[in-house]
Length: 67
Image 1 (spheres, rainbow, N blue to C red):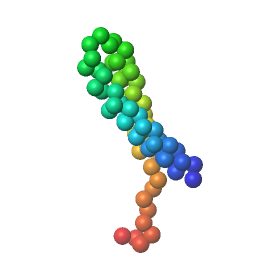
Image 2: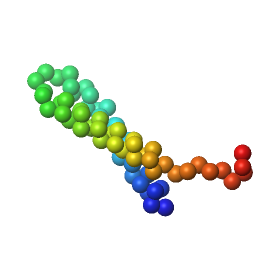
Image 3: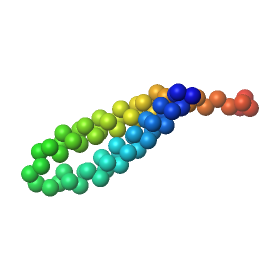
């Protein structure tokens, strides 16, 4: 049960951080912003971390019909 909750939290975190990352990309093309690359890197690392967590805590897909 705990792994299911960790999977759901990781999946939601990945979705939110990826959405913020996609919304943040257009601001990189404005001139004079140096903080943008650090923020982009942190958001990308956060998205990857949540994705790895979602894969790690993924519930098993065992079927009861044996097929």
